[in-house]
Length: 292
Image (cartoon, rainbow, N blue to C red; front, top):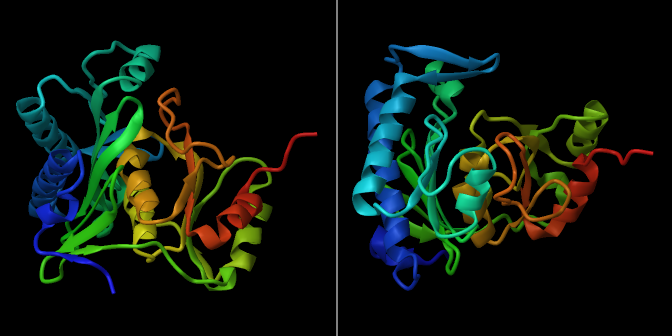
C-alpha cells in the first residue's frame, strides 16, 4: 500500500529542499489555473519553428512563475523555455557555467503547447530546481487531471490530486517486457528498425506530445518506460527525470550515461527512464547502431 501524507506539504517535510519543492508545487498549480481558464480559448499562436508553436498562455504562465521566483528567491538563477533568461550567467557556454554552481530554477511554463493549442488535454507546467548542477527538487502539474507530481533528491516521489490526497508513488513492477507500455519517440539512424524492435518486444508504444508529463507517468507506472532519443532541453527533463528517478526508475541518457548534463545544448537531451527490470534491454533495443 502506498504511503499517504496528511497534506501535500507533509510529503517532503524531512527534506532539506522541502520549502523549495512546496514552492515549485504551488507555483506550477497557479500556472495550471491560467491554462484551464484559457483552454480552448487561445487567442494568439506564433510559430517558433516548423513543428513548434508558442501561445499567449505560455507567456502568461512564464511571467507568473518567473515573477514568483524573483519575489521568493531573488538571488537564484532562472532558465525558462520562452524567455531563456537567467541570472548569474550570460549566454551560450555561460548558461552551463551558471547551472553548474549555485541554485537555478528551470521552468517549462507549458509543456505540450501543440496539444494545448489544438485542444488536446495532455500538457503540464514543469518547475525544477538545480543545485550545483544537479536536480534537487521538482514539480509537474497536470491541470486537466488536477494532478501534481513532485520529488526531492533526498527523498521520494509523490502524487497529489483532489479527493485522493497525497500518496507516495513507485515505478512499475511488471516483470515481463512483453507487458510494458512505453512512451517512445526515436530518431536518428535505422530508426524504423529500432522502433519496430521496441514495439515487438513490448505490449504497445505511445507518443503523447508532452515529454515532461509522459516521463512523470513513469513514476507511478502509467508508463513502464519513457524513451526519447533527442530533441529535449533542460526544462523538459529537470523535474520529470528527478520524479521518475526518486520513484525507483532507472534514468539515463540514451547511451546509458547521466541523464542531466548542464553542458548539453538546447534540444540535445535524450532520456531512457524505465523500471529497473528492463532498462538495459530497452537501451539496447532503442539505441542507434554503432558506426563501423
